[in-house]
Image (cartoon, rainbow, N blue to C red; front, side):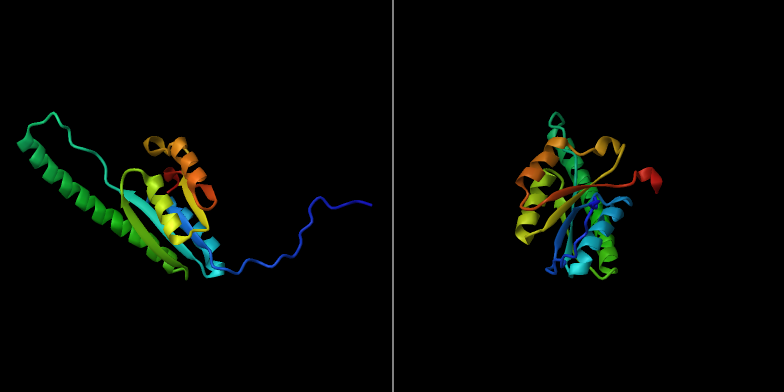
Length: 170
């Protein structure tokens, strides 16, 4: 008697709400990640948490103090402008998710050890799944494999890499 290679059993779906944390870089490609997170959380009346970082760069210490002060003020103005812009982009992604009937909140952190922020947020919110988007041929913004490995080891839940379309597709 032939046995089936695949047997699909009817199993009741988990009806508890899922909390999905999506690490977004705010690019147009990351909307695919947000959509995937909403797809997972939506049927269970779950929630999506969007996490992103902003900032960058430091001042050179070899410059004169008055030059450093003037450059420091310009740098602060640039960072504040970038923060406003990235905050608006993050709010658009949050609203896009909410427009699809999925509860969503966003968290914007200062640039730095992004895995630390993700881990803190995941532990605080009792997240069920962390999604990290990767783009083929992303260039300078490639994710460090050591950071991904550390995130996967220390996370209180599964971590999944989601392959996103390259930015050239948009």
